[in-house]
Image (cartoon, rainbow, N blue to C red; front, side):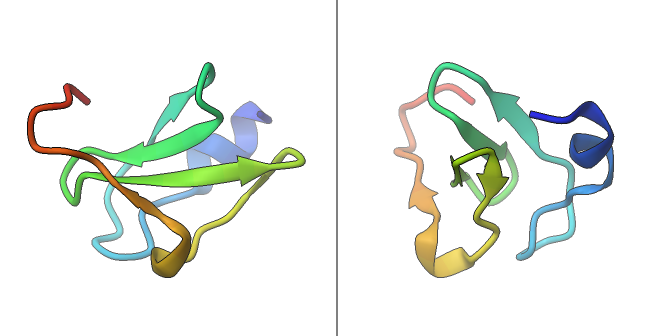
Length: 59
């Protein structure tokens, strides 16, 4: 994942910062507890495509 791209990407829901989860190939919004997938090195920043993180999962 390109570091410059990571610096400018924000959560499409709350406009907050994202955390890169390399092993899962996801960008995580801690505020909304959403994980946005990265497919073929392209972040899919659609709320409908995001995975809801369980309340008991640490982010």
